Image (cartoon, rainbow, N blue to C red; front, side):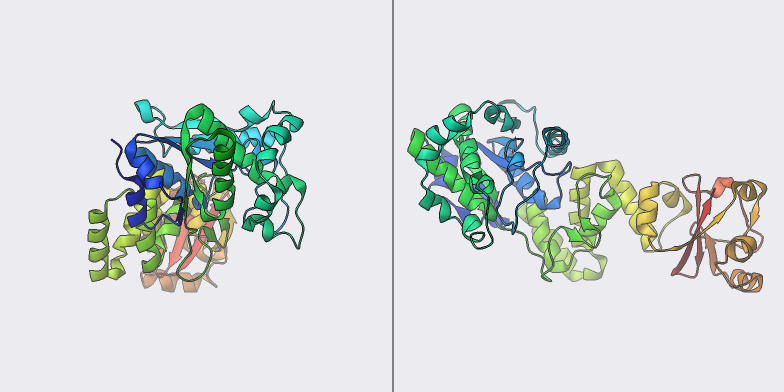
Length: 426
């Protein structure tokens, strides 16, 4: 018998709306359910993690999860939560995006565990040969215009305008549910609270066209305690793709969460039990300056998204950021992470020939770079033990050679605790 999936979501604060009878239906037998992912980019971002975690809990409860990639609906564009029409993507871009999203989902869901293995489906597979006239005859006649106009995603756009393309989106998504219900015995659709209207269109279509069993559950949209948008930073979205958001930047997003947000995130984005979470929260409240709660969240999510090696580098980079690091920690960084940590730091370039011959620390600080005003200032700071190379204190006799280079190209010079300089060797 399956475990109680709904109860699991409820204590984690992950249920916004639910169709009557859903919990009872899921407790009777192992069931199939799905969530749709819109492939409008070649990576998912942390805004999608709520839905990924919902499917993960669904599978852990013993049910069979389907991840639907909207290869067809991505060509239409979901109007939910949107104030204007979106640009439509061509087939080549969509196919690339679909492949990238599938690879990311495989890090969270088990696609090879027997009867309740996760499955990927692409709605382009059943829409590509669907004739328009057949669609409006066989599907459109079951849902009235009045019913479609009553949806919030439509009503909010009536004044500014909405194309027929976007207006028809709920019918297309509704057919997805009908198709999966009929062909994959899928009785549940899950999604964000902004998807409720589209989801219940599917349950209505199943009821009117096939008389099948269908249920719906939506999760709340995540809000940060300070009112700012979840998943956004000054640099934009926090992506799951390490090329778009480095594991260090990803880790830092969670590590820098407020106490209130971290207490919310640990329930939603980790698989820790209620007892484990209560213990971490309690320990955190005794010594909040240690940020134990934030560390627990950041480590758990980073490992599952990027793996153990990426987490080690992210933690090493965090140590560097807060001044508790070694030269080895610096050398382990990728170039992207190095500059993510030291963004905005003053830079100067010296020739590789100078470094091969041995570059004296005084020249590195002043004459060749201008980091300090003069050789005299450099000597004074060195005498006061204020100068470091790659986070290690040095004397006025120190020589920079190729052995000390980070990524065979950079040297991190420091004056005191807060003043850093990057020497680029070319």
